[in-house]
Image (cartoon, rainbow, N blue to C red; front, side, top):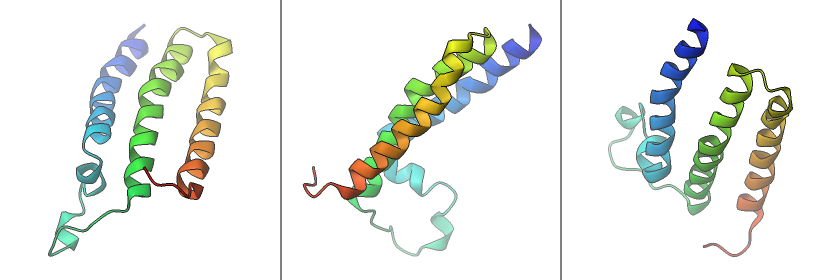
Length: 101
C-alpha cells in the first residue's frame, strides 16, 4: 500500500511538468539549456507540434499505465506498448506531413 501512495505522490509533479510542457513547448525545450545560447533560439513547427503531441500522449497514457501497475489490471499493462506505437506513428505523421498547420 505504501508504494502505491509513493507512486501517486511522485506522479503529481511529473504530470504537472507534462501539462506545462504542453502549454509552453518552447520553454520546456529550453529547460536547463538557456545558458548555451546568447539569443533565444527558434524552433521549427514540427518540433513544437511533436512536443505538444508527446505531452498530450503522456497526459493520457501516464494515468493508464500507472493505474494498471498500481491496481494490477493486466489488460491495461498492454497500454504501454500501445502508447509507444502511438508516439511513433504520431511522430511519423508530424515529420512527414507536407501541409504544415
